Length: 219
Length: 207
Image 1 (cartoon, each protein chain N blue to C red):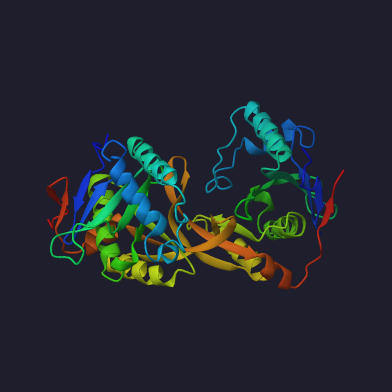
Image 2: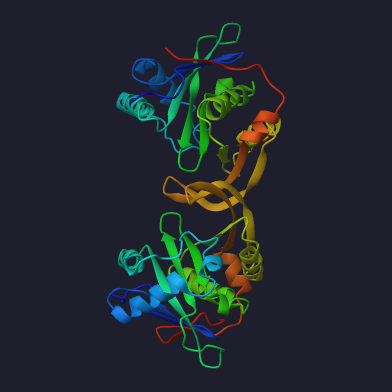
């Protein structure tokens, strides 16, 4: 079920609405819409260049991704959310991309990931969504550190991640050599992190709702 | 399965013997790793002093089977002739290859009476030779808890000799006794190793 006692089904930030991805709430039309974008959206090759997946070749791949993320959610290991700009934004209500998180309960960490359709780049959506997940990690899940790994060659994302992690009091931990395997080859990543304490001291002033309830307000 | 790891490695002052139920006696390992005086030795590693010989037996059995599967190579460290304490068992060291990532990581437990002699660096040079010259891996990584200042100094010394780098302090990177801990990570790449001033080459032996 999308209903999860810890992970919200819907997250609203100032400009975005994030909807949990789960097989229970998506119908065939949703899956096919998801597939259209993951397979043949304009610039999809550029969008996926530094991601852990390649453009989908069949709707079955899209469905398997959705099923995998549903299982992770059911097991409390992570979640995936589709991104929609809210009213007032250019392209309000359209599917703008997908973001998610993985939780390592033993290490008390959350790792973030996101991709946006190219039409939605450059608006600061990534940072806005990151603050929402950091709030979830620290205020709700009581985790200690939020992590973001960026492929060293992905300079565009590095700049964005550097900016929002530093704004929240964190920053780069260092370079992890041969850390991920991309198309069969090991690649290096830069790791950025924000701790619970750093976030408390640098919490951005923003309005957030988890399943309709206001959260993350300054105390 | 064919084992890719050398059975024995000789350096200037050390002899590393592949650890399994044949090469190291249970008595030796149990005596060395059951204390007393191991608090400092094991303070920063995922290992507790043994309380029964069964733990020593299962360690060696596991080392043997991991080695047989080419998953990891654990060696018992002995001192060679001419060293104070020649032929004594001085500790254990393990090379953990990650074949998909083309990397390996190192670990060592060295008994306290043998600290301060530069053995860790000498053993690291031997592990680099295995990782790069034999296994054709691209990166060797060494992790260290920030509060383990003595090991950190030793690692900085030998990583520097092989042109390697300190890559950062990674938060909540590992769990030790169920608690998340931060980890300094150092690496030496294949290119850095190849460009290093040659030290006496370790001798790799297969039996």
